[in-house]
Length: 537
Image 1: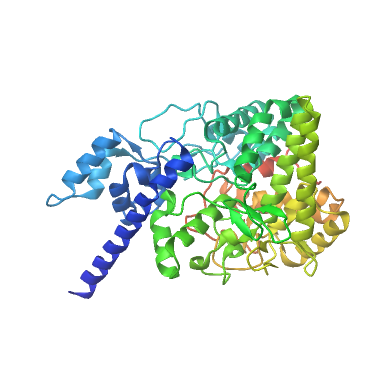
Image 2: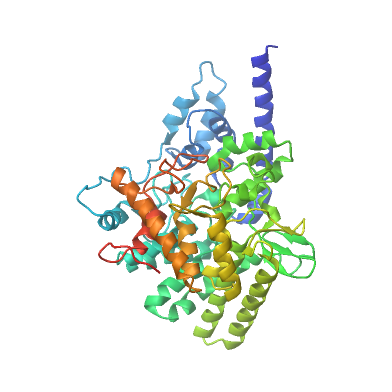
């Protein structure tokens, strides 16, 4: 057998093993989703493997989002018959049976006469979707109300993106759309027990940073505390999702998203209920697992858990700080996630009180207070004077300073002394000419230097301001706004991330930098006054 033939045979056997892994995961998926719609990898298992393992689509997400033009059963039957015929053309087969999805925002034409605020306000309409119609076999989970998508390949709602988009919608006077988006998230929680990563079937096995309580707070700031009571059932369901397994998890072990430390402290980690390649990055995940030399399921799980964190991908999760094949996200207790869950527990207390249930309000407050104590005790690194990821198996802090360490300031978990020290650490490690970087490491991953991201800059700006660290907050705000405006003046568009260290384009990750772009628009709009001038915290 020739070398090329041997390589093809090995590749075929490897894909076959991955396909078996996916099919074997079906019972676990059914137990998780309990009748939820299947993702494309399970709806079209053999065809999906063939297409995603090929180079028909450079972006694996394209086929995951493609819309079948026939019943999936009929498509699968046709594929099994046709694939063994002479001259079978996989690309032509897919073109006959699926409609390729469009990029979001491609029809928008920039008016050079508009300032950036007018540009953003006009773009909201272009990025607005819904209400959705259900399409048989589509991976899109239909939503009953309007919502804003990020743009580009991101043609669906995303959980944590939406909070930062909502901040800009409020600044644009679009409170109506903010309320509709919160209603959509409440609908997803009612239907699936949690907010998935996005409204796609292939996102159902994981969530994203849980900002629902922060969204409720945003609406309540305008509509009053009755909003907390209105969304109390959904906040409770979301809390149950993140805390599933807490009652039985033993000390020094984990169960899904909860970890109980040897001292009895209970904190959370990122996780995914499936351990297979992601539908939207199938070929890439298969290759990463192959290169790792580790158990494939462990690699797939941590890749998926990193996607749940929103930081996909970063040296933050990598053993060697560089190679994606060393990813081990599930071994970290992150300050961002645990600060968000503290906010959820505080919101639950407010919701119970607004509903007239003082006993449960006090119980929720006690849970929030206990989590705050554990965050301050476990996730605060006294040597670095900063909140850091904690490796719970190794009983030590990560060596990497990350922008996630500002979340305890944003949600007011940190002490005044910790906030002061955090400001110094951030200035030393993360501050750059155009804002802050996620980590000081240049790994080649997109959630590392030299890239800057709107949500992380906002969290740092507002977190510092809440502890009266106004000078640093203002410096970051001015740098970030000017970074955005420089790009807008040059290209009349806003993109998802920026190179905040120099003047070049942002470093790509597993896909090219997208424009649109939901959360960049949102945070920039929130940092500008009504007459489009920079506002300082």
